[in-house]
Amino acid sequence: MRQLLLAVLLACSISAAQAADLVVFAAASLTDALKDIAPLWEKSGGAPVKFSFAASSTLARQIEQGAPANLFISADLQWMDWADQRHLVVTATRRNLLGNSMVLVMPKERVKQVQISPTLDILALLDPDGRIATGDPASVPVGIYAKQAFTNLGLWDKVQPRIAGAESVRAALLLVERHEAPIGIVYATDAAVDPAVAVAGTFPADSHPPIIYPFAVTSAGDTPEARKLLDFLAGPESRAAFAKRGFKLLAP
Image (cartoon, rainbow, N blue to C red; front, side, top):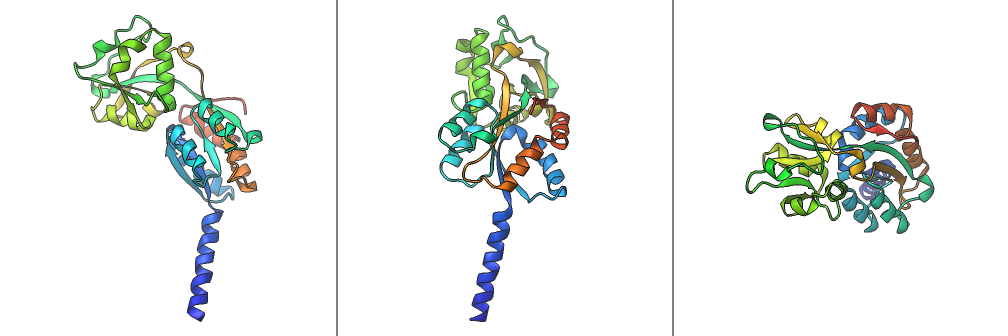
C-alpha cells in the first residue's frame, strides 16, 4: 500500500512539473531565435519552455484539435486571424512583433545574382526537370507570400507548374541544401542560418504583403506565466536576440 501511495505521489509530482512547463507553438523560421531566447527567459526566473516548430498552418490546426500550447506565434496574419476567429487565442494579447523579407536562394557553390522583377526569366535558372522549393502555396505562409509575389510580378502562371510545395520553410530550405531543388524561396533569416545556401536575390517589398509575425497567448493555455513569457518576448533582451538573427523589429 505504501509503495502504491509513493508511486501515486511521484506520478502527481511529475505531472505537476510537466504542467509547470510552458509550451510555445512557433513558426519554423523562428527556431534559432527562440532557442537563443529560451535560456535568457529561464535565467530570469521563468518556467521551462518547450517548443513545437512547424508551419503556422499546421500549428493552428493542431491547437484547434486540442494540442496543449500556451503561446502561438505565426509567420503571417492570416493564420493568426484564423485562430482568433475560432477563439483559439486571446485577442487582447495579440502583438505584431517581428517582420522579415523573402529571398531566392541557391546552393552556395552555384549561386548567381539575379534581379527579381517582372522581366526575370526564372525558368532559365532551372534544370529541365528542376523545381522551385518553397512552402505549400495553399497553406504555408512562405508559399502564400511567394505566390502573391509571383502573381504581382506577372510570373505565377510560368512558375506554378514548377513549384515544389514543402510542409514548412525549413523543409523548403533543406531541399535546396540537398540539391534536390536548384532554387528555393525562403525568408532571409532562414537563408542566413544555412551555410550551404546563398541568397541570389531579394523579392521587392511591394511585391507581396508585409511579412509579419503575430504573437498571442492561447485561450486554453492562458496563464499568468504565459503572459509573462509573451511580455519577455516583446522585451529588450528578446528583441536584441531577434535582431541578431536578422528579424525586423516592429513597434511592440
